[in-house]
Amino acid sequence: MFFQERIRGIRADDQVLEIGPGSDPHPRSDVLLELQYDKEEDRKAQFGHGTGLQTEKKIVYYDGRVFPFEDKSFDYVICSHVLEHVDDVEGFLKEIFRVASKGYFEYPLAYYEYLYNFDVHLNLLKFEQGMLYCMKKSQTHLDEFKGIQIFYLDALRKGHSGHIENLLPLMMEGFEWEQPFKFTATKNMADILWKNYEIPLFKPVSSNNYSAFYHFKAMVRKLIHLK
Image 1: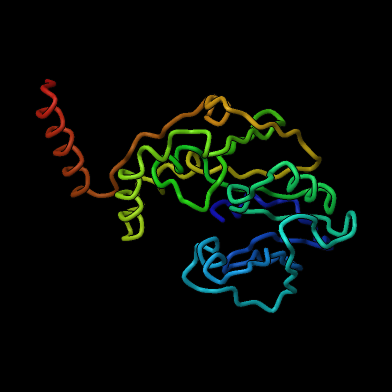
Image 2: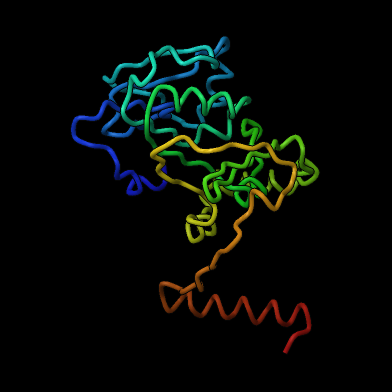
């Protein structure tokens, strides 16, 4: 979870469910819901962490369809970096809205997926004016750039993440909700992109970086014959 500070709606006496917590559950989670995998290699591929889940919180496993809880069993649901993995997003949302009255969602946006195209991510998502838009990656041409994405993914795994960190609020989306919202499947790329955004001006953090930055710009100008 990148935007933990956006979780503000949990009251002191709320019962909190967290879905797919990874290796680091939220401190306020009371119950953790995990998918039951038939094969250990599938679990590792989806998990995305080098370390396993170590917790004393209650863990409940389910089959990926109906949540094993009664209606309104929880006051709040945390669902961070799960929706991009889910095959039936609409059905998944209905289950979340059934078991809780409010919560938090977080997921990567298309800009992030364009760079890395993780095989385990199935969906491109964007929330706009009370509507969650979902586009299946299989309906795009992202795989045509797989060779380039492998390059960026290899760089990411070796610690080159500065460009993502600098633009994190534009690469990821996280928001609280207090009532069920609408869902639509889309094939229109414009639906899953920012309608309005502002990219902050990059500010080097040291004099050395400052010099290197302008040296790089000078090299680019020379290469493309700009003055």
